[in-house]
Image 1: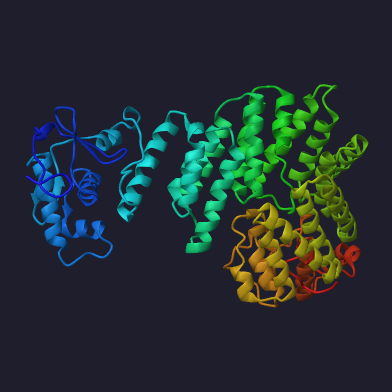
Image 2 (image 1 turned 90 degrees about the vertical axis):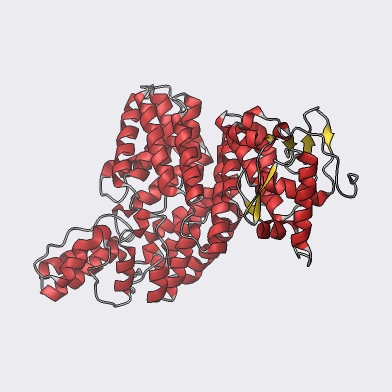
Length: 565
């Protein structure tokens, strides 16, 4: 027989009960409880590769490819020799020949038991004594993910954060690694960091591989947001759910975040505590820049919940909470001419100024901006709101509202025709977006560049799918601004009646809503009136547009232009 250092090894085992350990160094334990030397690292690697196959046949060719990066001329003979020597050490029936391959049969293998019950087997670095060849790295990653999943299922994710952080950093393209880290952070109470991990991973994968979606990451984000609501009805949990949803909205998960906010508010209101409901309603602190809600039904329900809560608040409720609730009403009830919504914005601003609280003031100014669309031609007022938002936010480190201020400034100065000022805001907001990782900003600035250099292909390529309220009807209106005929096959959203009236003389023309497209829709109305020779309709259009005289039609969007009025 050969020595352990050179060749054949004395066989003294009852092979049926050989124990093979790979959670740690590759080790064999005989029936007498002693460690059996199996020879060189190459033999241990071959044994480990058969273990990794999980009882499946591994072809001779696969073994050669996995054992050598550049196989030697005698690789086939070497593998067969290794197998023969392992059989001599472990017993003849442990490794079986099947065709031109081999399979591990009669053995007690720790990792096989681990796969069946991860919590029942002690853990060590898998294949710890083997070189990091591709198959070894793949197995280590797979087993770590299996163990992590088991611990997460037991609610023990907090203990994994450090380990999974290193693992995820080492495997930036491995979706499961990012998902596991996110769930571990969530179980450690670090919901915002968990959502950041998923957002950053999605960005890497989309940028590198040109993916439209990353389902595993999307499902993980959905799970985390849903669990944040479902874990209970306490003040801390429900308010936390709303905060987390707000953070998700700021970093790109807008539609899902709004759904989770709505669920948290509904659960808070069900508990019958107006103070709790008010705090959950106002914890979703996300600036709003567009006058068309992404989900009109949910926005309406939030407004009604806020109005009910405001009526039920005790007299000694914090003034800041009352001001924030009023701002919620004004922000969510946008795009209308209901005076009570504008009054809510004004009262929120008055209370905020009395308090001297900058965090409340910027929310109230946001509400004022949203309600400023109740009348046309108020771009100069919006420019002043933008300047105050920027100044207060920069002084008090409120980057989300500083970002909003620059977006509002970009829109206001575009409407006023001062594109130099608008471009300064665009540059500033893009810098903020890079620092604070707010990807939706770039959609608006890309639109601004298209407005300055209109291009049909550019408008068609502009991706607004993550912002339903902005996307609704945008493309056909943008193409119309280029002088193209109205295309009724496109999705006009709420603006279809104007498109139909442009091409069908028997269609009624509605009164435009108080939103970003107010002047655009009256401009289209004037064109319809001219086509029909309708002097009454033409007079109504002139009267509606007169306050915006001198402004750029469509400039309030900072994305399309029908020329100066």
